[in-house]
Length: 408
Image 1: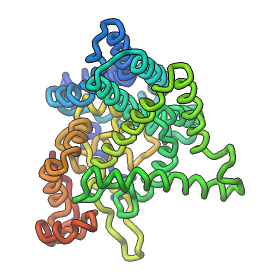
Image 2: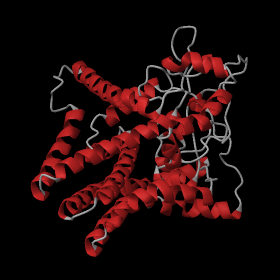
Image 3: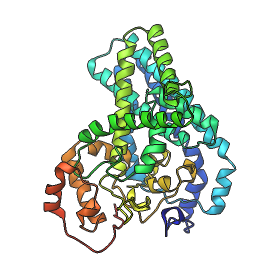
Image 4: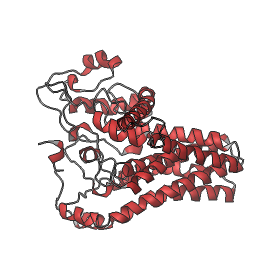
């Protein structure tokens, strides 16, 4: 059965009364997307009102501490929509899009608010770090929203909102590179946004950040060339998004003061790094096999790491149901389904991103999962070339089975 034809095993399962109740109220929990920028706005207000810079840490603490704890307490989301429930959810598309449109506007309000407070106040270096980390978390969620919006290529409103969202953190090439590059080359050595076994997060960042930017520019230049337009045409979507960032950052710098500019740039760069952390954990070590004709096999559910914890899935707009996303890139976030037999991460994205920052801990937790996924055959794994000999010497045990799902 091909990836596009496969059906999540848990789809249409019988739910307990508690789980049915969750499926009924889940639509309201997506409002957490609005709460993220609202929390940042409230925290900067409290910091200015009380004079306590510790409030500037609020969103960072929620992202890195509270969400993993809530995941641990409330565990996994049992709800996969049946075809009938999907039809009902699609009738309320405006509600789910509306959440993202409002959150996009709030992202900019939150960024401007935090920038003003950072410049206007007298904060310790410790609390300035908190401001940067909180703003980086804001950008991470913003890029998640941009990712969701940017896949809806037949909806001009959502595509425009995606550009505005990406512009907030100055990541202009994201939607172009992700849609046309990553989704084509995912889980292959050709993809700068697919991490390799043995490659640390920091090594990956040095490859992924410039590689993705270069691929985004190249893809857009090729698109414009096919239309017989200059790469510097006003139709260049990368330049359009960059112009939004330039105008907005210049306006904030003019109105707030020159000290706003370094804060805007550093917090944006940290937001990029948080996206890189997400990319790092999504396909670590997973490899599409090469067919006799020299092409890579089609992307399958077992080429993405998944997680189904409630809190982090709501926060990331179901991005952790990553196999279904790659199967159906245009599927709206509220419709994404869990593949119970797909490779599973032991924790949600925030916890795994934190783990990835400690390379030895990450490898201790994840390498044996990759080995199990490949059935011990390291020829089936996407390995960092500099680590290939060491990985083979330690793990290689040829098997005749195809890669299998890995339980959390």
